[in-house]
Length: 296
Image 1 (tube, rainbow, N blue to C red):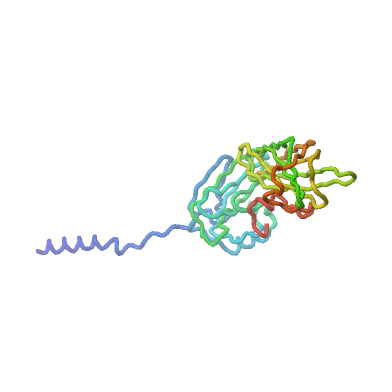
Image 2: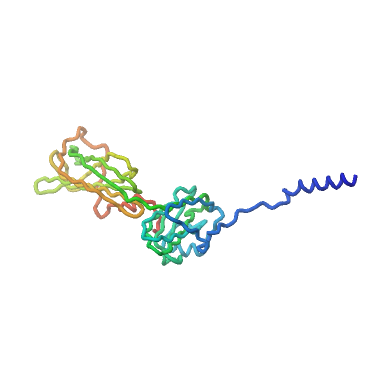
């Protein structure tokens, strides 16, 4: 009976062990601060759980010249190229909204090179060490971070302009132009242009400004223009259009210009009249199309 009692006691003790054990907690990552920065090489793609990463007063101080809305769950990486390189740091595949700051040498507000949400470009110099802080720019404290370091390809763009356009009868005095375009290896693209038609000594002119897709495909574009100084009519006119395609580091452009013929449109009035935009008020393509922080 004594042996049986000891056996029962031992079995009860084993059964209580899981209840008495304390649950394991996720550790703060080793690259939570700059001294623990993980070394990156060109072509690397790293995946990290940053849900236990922290932020502190140093992160806030480093954000002084960047203006990110938050610097939560910050983790650090470093990159030292052996030769001058253009690189892109891209964290947009992460499952939370990310921001990046890049510093040359010891991280400080004054050593900030570039910053932005999701992806940034860097012209890295040989022999220099760059510290990269990746963080959550919202109240979400991290998650599954996916960060890649690649050599971005420069954008390629092309635009064409149709030989004929249409003019609309009626008080609007609008004209419609058409053409095609393509944009590859860019983050966004932007179309601008001007339509000029002579009416005696007067020049009827209007500008177009239009955001475009940059997905590598061939597209058709159409734009409606209204002149603030007169009315377009059937006849000859001159057009110049320009496409700008921008990547993380550089922009490329293509220009098409030609004399066209405006014919009367089948409809008396266009379906939608776009008021002319003053040259000084034309939105800059970076501001119009690239996600940014108010303080950037």
